[in-house]
Every structure is written in structure tokens, then in C-alpha cells.
Length: 214
Ligand code: BEZ
Image (cartoon, rainbow, N blue to C red; front, side):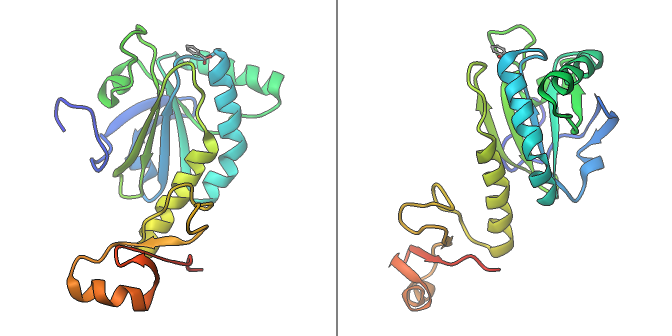
């Protein structure tokens, strides 16, 4: 990974960061948890403010899923503090998750700097699992706020996929073909392929589905 941006499947790079909750070691301080590290272009900007409100609203749901949130921008910690005070006083919500005050080093390591925007970070989202492996990365442009229900759906979907050794269909849990059912991974040998249609509901041996367990 030396010299290139981390990709899906790579370990999350080790780093020590300054946050609104003090210094943190990543990924070590969050070992055993999922975490979502998300960057925003700058404090005191309108779309980012709506994003922080949306993330904080869903924070209890993320915590129920053993998932922590960490914000990041290339702003100083006092700017983050003043911004979350503004959000508390004007929007009546307390931002509870830490925000990294990056000097540019984390942004450089993770490939977060917007090419056309000086030191502003893009809207990136890194999904990291309890083994510190990067499982997904999203990038959005400055003018488009993220869909936080999708981010929550992705965490739920990853956890089901891992626990039940299945794959998750499009638009789950409202898939147009199979509703909230989940996909049995395709057979990789003839004997298993022949058994699939007896064991599961299938469109064909390579497209079989089953109900969620539990
Ligand atoms: C915003 O959050 O509103 C924003 C930030 C940077 C560029 C454009 C919009």
C-alpha cells in the first residue's frame, strides 16, 4: 500500500489523530468495532451542516450496530468546536461523535484532497470492519450531500452478509424481485449447482435466494 491510496480490502492505515475528543489512535482505539470515517470540505458550510445533523440523528442506530462515527476536515480543532457549538445552539442537536482536526496528513494518506480545491477534503466515506479492513469507500462531490440512510443500510447489509455468508441484492430490503430476501452465493461446482434448486428458491442455479435468518 506504500505510496498509493488505500482501497477496498486493504487494512486501514495506522495513524494518530487530533480530534474534538482528544488524541485517538486509528484503527487501534476502535478495535472490535465497525467505524465510519467521513470527511467534509470545511466547517461552517451549508451542505456539511445538514450532513452533520443527519449523521447525529442516526448516531444511536449506528451505535446499536457496534459502529462508531468519526468526522474529518482540514480545519483546526477550535473551528470544529465553534461549529458544533453553533449547531447545538441553532439546530438544537449535540454532535456526539469525534471530529478529526487534520493538518492535511490524514487527507493525503487516504486520498481525500479535492484536486481543484486547495486543502478542502472531498466528501469521502470509509467503512472499516472490526478487523480494521476497509470494506467500502464512497466519494461525493462538494455540491451533493450524502444519503445517510444508505450509509446505515450498508452497515446493516455488511453485518448480515458476514454473519449469514450471503450477498445482498439491489435496493435491499426492498428489492424489486425478491423483497427482503438475501442471495445465496453462486455454486462453484457442478454437484452444488445441481442441489441448489432443491435447497432454495431460484431463478436458476446461480440466482438463488432465501429468507433472512433471525
Ligand atoms: C457545503 O458544505 O455547503 C459546501 C462546502 C464546500 C463547497 C461547496 C459547498
